[in-house]
Image (cartoon, rainbow over all chains, first blue to last red; front, side, top):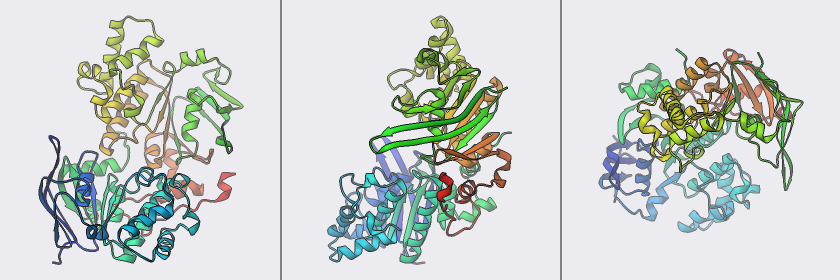
Length: 250
Length: 276
């Protein structure tokens, strides 16, 4: 077996008294698309944020491409490899910076020189023309903002993308466009995805493997095919599956 | 029997950059049935519900050929008459209990407030009615929840409390604007079940507004699909598969579903003529 791209072992996260993650272990292979489903409070976002260094963890190990990282603090090289896209496209872009400035920031941090060409290419890749370059985020729709957020993550050429509910604030038709864009980017750049969502449909569409989380623990890890063939064990997975099928009058 | 008649409803907002027509000529009638209104953000679905409820901001302009609720002309009646309707005969459930309940009032007091506004009864009777209602929305310990503040309960519990508050006066028409969108999927079904049972038992007309076409069609008898302020298609829920309008079809088609392997997902190609 190859070295996992991301390996989390017995990670525990505590906020004040509350145990948000109870010794969670996951391992994600390079170029794999790994999904995490669960409802609010299941710890799915906490896990993602702990990997990204936005929460610290109290115990456990985190390895990214074989290198260990501490509970707190990440160096620049980490963020060259790992980037994150957040749920709320309204809250995750600086309201007083133009798109150009937003995209320049990561390039400046990581010392890129050919910024002009890279910004133009990044916009092009997410399907927005150069006309968007000098707009502010409030002049964009939700879907366009999410495209900018994805462009900002991809512009430093990361290998691993952490996606925290990237489409749940968007309309269904826009969601399809963003999911297609993410899949395209993954194919073109051989990216590893870790994607969090409450929507079983989205996760099974996007991911090679998925973990079901509840109450700060991983209930089970299955293949998306198992959902169709009902080859899963946990009752909670079944509940999620039933709920995703819509309302039924009995 | 027709409960509500809406004919050529228009809601227009004046803005600095000109007039924005949020609703552009919506017509439908509603009896004691479950009607779904589906659309994406900006389609005018919520503004349609709010216009019926009388909650449109005052700067907006509402026009209609007919806007009638059980014989009453909703465009002509005074704000005072409106207030006697709202909460009593027409009620509305909003999306997020975190924002739509009063944060500084206990849940019980909010339900009692609705009751006392519309009916002359003693505090004791009101309390009894509120407790009975909380029990009807399957809150296990109504006495305890009665004295809790909205921030002390979960989203699902908050939404049940809102349903209780809205149904306590026995309305004839209930408008539910994305009643379960803020809830976890597993909780969604419980809340919908309660809503479904109460609507059936108490015999009221329901307008269910949502962005989720599948959910609406599984819950309602009839569905209106809105796009850019207009109804582009109306169809019985059972015939959703036979939808004719390309927008409805596209909306159904672009959802990722379990067990289907479609890469890339079909996307919606918006046509300019849909807006006409």
